[in-house]
Every structure is written in C-alpha cells, then in structure tokens.
Image 1 (tube, rainbow, N blue to C red):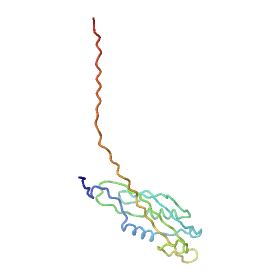
Image 2 (image 1 turned 180 degrees about the horizontal axis):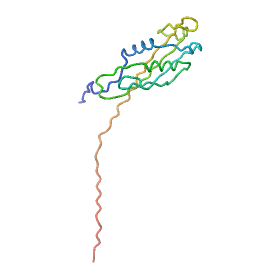
Image 3 (image 1 turned 90 degrees about the vertical axis):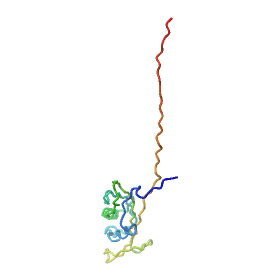
Image 4 (image 1 turned 135 degrees about the vertical axis):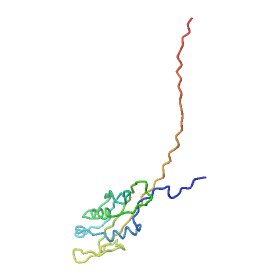
Length: 165
C-alpha cells in the first residue's frame, strides 16, 4: 500500500495574485508601447525568463527572444517590477523560474488581439493591442535514488611458510 502524500510535504512555488488573469491585468496596466517601436511599426513577441526568490521579488530576468526597438527593455521593466506572493509555510528558501511572453501588436494588424489599450502615439491617439502568455514550468519526473546496498569484500593474505627438512 502506497503512503499518501500530504499537501504539506511539497514545496510551494511563489505565485502572482490573480494567476494568469492577474498577470494580464498587470501587464495591461503597466505596458507603455515604446515610441521607437511605434515609429518603426514594430510588432512581435518578447519572451522573458525570470526567477523569483523566496521573498517574492524578481531577481533575474533575461530576454529569450526579443524584437528590439525598445520592446525588449519594456518587457524587462514590466517583469522586474512584478511582485509575487510567497506561501507562509516557507521554511525552505527556494527560487521559482518561469517564462512570460508579451505580444506587442500595432493597431490594424491582421493578428488583432482582444486586449487593447489607448496610448498617445505619433499621430494623435493610437490603440495598441497586446497579449500576455504565461508558460508554466515543466515538471520533470522526480528522481528516485535507490537505497544503497552494502557489500563487503574481505581479502586475507596468509603468510607462506616454507617447510624445513
């Protein structure tokens, strides 16, 4: 019979309040489409890998795939300003890594997305679309370490005795 694991046996990861919807709302509130990207009519997806420490702060943020023209810097600024919640049961100080994809879309683009935000653009007011995608971390199979087996090897060296005649 297998022993049931209780919820308290697992390390709890840091989380953003509101989950995916909370992250989308935060990005919607904080996103400022870079002026350089507007002028160059750049759109695309910026992928960011970030690490959250045991206090809920983003300690590392790196661009995995960027589009330039200030969009990479804007995505990093948003991710670095995020504050995560950490479960109180944390006797273990652990880090949590995840990926975030921020999609920058210009108005009138074929891939118009449902989330929009009005900003001051080059030619008056402009509406910019964006989408946030959160990729959960991949959970690998737990590694089972076999119980060590004990084996002994004994070697006895007997002295050779020559027989006298």
